[in-house]
Image 1 (tube, rainbow, N blue to C red):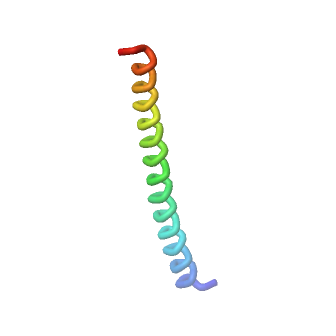
Image 2: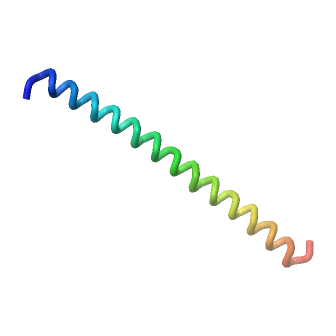
Image 3: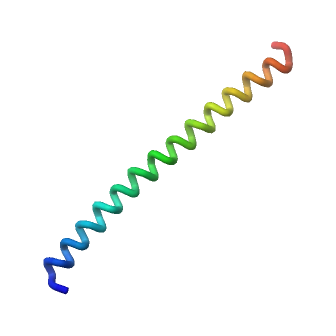
Length: 52
């Protein structure tokens, strides 16, 4: 493999890594958001059940 091919492959790997990193960040934010919404719903349900 020539040096030029190695540089091209390395650039593709870096681009793929950046793309995967962005997707992972989106997934983490979505999961955290869902957990926060569930916590708020649970607090509302508890307050309703306790008659507050």
